[in-house]
Structures are given as structure tokens and as C-alpha cells.
Image (cartoon, rainbow, N blue to C red; front, side, top):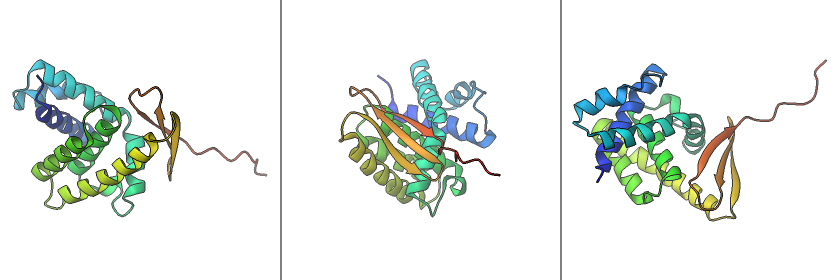
Length: 178
């Protein structure tokens, strides 16, 4: 059985490194960080899955967080807070893990690795994400859109399959300027 706490910690550390270098091409990060945590192969594999899924959807997640916490946009957040929030939002929207578990684990990771105020901040943002997400998924099956300053977040829920976040750019102005 997987140690989910260890999986999240390894995924968090991986995301932090990728974010610090603005580059996720170094896939060996999971192995190196996993050595520090004495993680087994199953933990590493699932942590890699979570980190890659989070990294691939980070722009959509960031736009959602920016809209819900405009006073602390993602670019101004400490790197650990950013990684914790991204990972938790991805897990909330792409896995069957109970939301209370996801949020509690995110708060604990923030308390352990970031500032003294990070736990409360993470809790507040994730609570807002969860409320909005629950409102969206309780509606009819299909795609729902959340407007953000960076475009539209599309949340697709079809046949109760996992949710995918995708950012759609704002439609370009079709009027030609002379």
C-alpha cells in the first residue's frame, strides 16, 4: 500500500525544483529526491504521475488561484506555497481522494515546509477552490467554464470520469484595425 503522505511530499519537492528552474525536463528529480525520502518504486512512480499532471495543468491552476486570491497572485507566493496549492488543486480535480484529506495534507505540507502563515493561506484558497469546484460538478455533465483574467478555465466532466482543467485563451478581437 502506498504511503500517500510520502507520495505528496515527493511530488511537492519535484514541483518545487521544476518551478525553481522553470523546467520539467529533468525527470530524474523524482529519483534524486526519492532517494532522500527513502521512497520505494511505487511511491516514486505515483509521485511522478502527480507531479507531471500538476505541471502540465499549472497554467490553468495558476489562473484559478489568481482569480480566487488576487491579493496574493501565484507569481508573488513563496515557491513552496505555490507548489502545495498546485498539487492540491490537481489532486482535488483529478483524483478520487476525499477533499478533506487533500486539504488537510496540503495544510500540513505548507506548515512543515513554508512560513508560519502558509497553512492558513493554503486552507483559505483550497476551501474556495473546493466550493467552486463542487458547484461546477453538481451541475449537468459536460464542460463548465470559469472566467479568469488569463482566459477561460474549462472543467470537463463527462460520465463521471476524472476532471481535466484546460485554459482557453480569450477570443481575439476579430475587427481589423486600420
